[in-house]
Image (cartoon, rainbow, N blue to C red; front, side, top):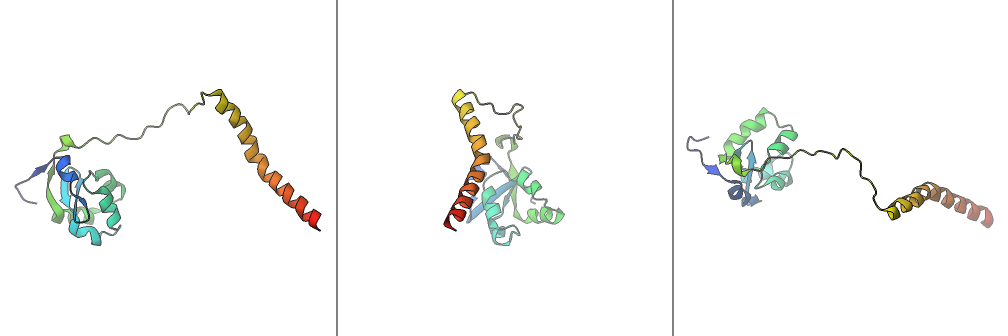
Length: 135
């Protein structure tokens, strides 16, 4: 890594989003991984899906080890302006289950649920009836 750090906004990185020009942001550092696409052990699709974006979370989730982190040094092009990168918002499930507000939906569920249970038995009974009728 050079001492003359260049800073990139997310909008500048986002234009590098294809197989001929592929940049990613990992831990607020910008990497040009274009020449690594063919060699990436997980396939180029993974890098292309992250192209032009902050891939920090995906990089961590993949469980990359110290060798992968050292390898990043050869692809370093600069620092990401972290104020331009949106913060990841973790998924928070709703505390209350989805409720059916429509009376029509409630009544249709009262019909559908028993049918899901009884229909296979009706088909089985019909099949046995046909089988014994043909004999």
